[in-house]
Length: 198
Image 1 (cartoon, rainbow, N blue to C red):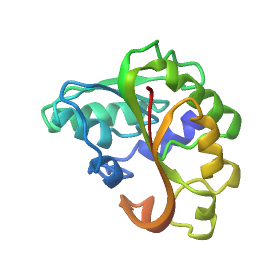
Image 2 (spheres, helix red, strand yellow; image 1 turned 90 degrees about the vertical axis):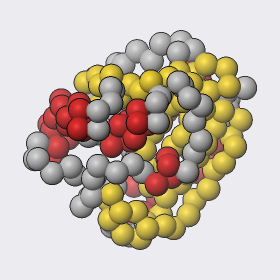
Image 3 (cartoon, one colour; image 1 turned 180 degrees about the vertical axis):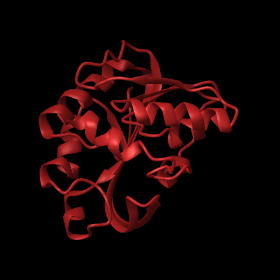
């Protein structure tokens, strides 16, 4: 069902969330030649941005339409992205492979969220980091993007629990303008997190 939903959203020529990267992701620094994993990456805007910085980027999404558009965008920008169509509930993250794992508006039902987040510590190399931005539970009052179901929106206490094995460098809930295509547009309540594996 999720695959069908996202394939339908991404089947048009237009990029549903635009072609420009998430602004919170842009604020972070990256070591040259880092191996980066972008999860639930959609149509590839963040993966392509990172590839343009010279990083070794793998993008994973459940939607074959999204993966096709990731590859198209990478070609437009003359970069290479390893784009994989896979269901994250069964995806093999590998052990100590990644320098950075990126989750931008990657919303999952609670059990799947916990399962995916629990894989990230082992998947990262020592010193690796997670960069995450998601809609908070308060986003149900804004209606400017994200899941309509409260359980698929996040709270700081949930993320602190999910990432308890990490050193959390930053976690905050804030109100900000999100302008990413027609589906993420307007004032929103978001949570931003940066955490490292020591």
